[in-house]
Length: 302
Ligand SMILES: O[C@H]1[C@H](O)[C@@H](O)[C@H](O)[C@@H](O)[C@H]1O
Ligand SMILES: [Fe+2]
Ligand SMILES: [Fe+2]
Image 1 (tube, helix red, strand yellow):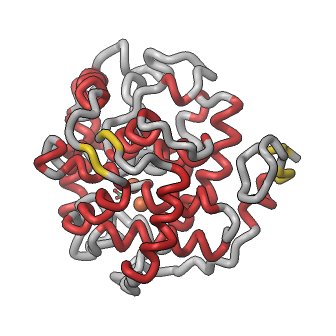
Image 2 (spheres, rainbow, N blue to C red):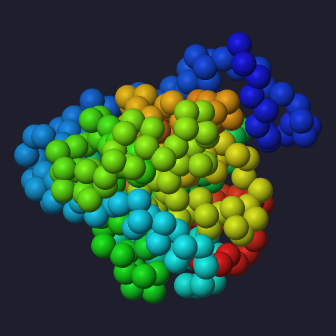
């Protein structure tokens, strides 16, 4: 039994919720669909479903180009938060235009994905309003593909993430393309732990650059009051090698392990809520606007 201290709505500050890992994941009724909207299994990167080639090309570019140096440069550039000033909902609307090339399970505009995952999690965890909002914002970093935000290629924005600066684990999707990454043959970067030490904490590990780390940065630097589990979800939700296969777990510290439980909960909704049944945006907007006002300033620097 572990004690997790996450600000539950209506709870006095510091009051603790007693949960063990099983309890945490079993409080939901979300029926996992077996097939995605195209009639295939979820996260199937091998079967040709009409999107296979585009997805594979995406991973090829990502695996070749996401180097330790590249990530450092991107972080420095986007740390400036000098691209725009806008509110969270405004950003949700920008996502209307974007279709994610790395995703074998969805070809709807991203705003639908945000609302589908947020509504699904809201149904099962009605009191965890921070979790609903976390779902709403988790993919907002995809605006990096828009010209105003640097117009980055999709390989630098979407897709699963992985640490750079250490060996690329075999559990990464389309692992073979890493062979063309300059870090692959660099002895500083190609050992199991590379430039890191075990237990250093994920915060000290550079992740491939993309929408996760960017949105984490935006939320944190703009002073969000979301609990640390919410920020952790935003930052690591694409880190499938860790959450699906336990790869790279040697870098986690205690706090990461606590937050990880919530990431596992979230992950299910992120993946399995993808569907062709669209959410009525105008109908749910007032609810999400009230959450945004609770946890974020009206305008943020991006
Ligand atoms: O294709 C998907 C998509 O880009 C998601 O937003 C990301 O979080 C996933 O990890 C990725 O595999
Ligand atoms: Fe994502
Ligand atoms: Fe997502």
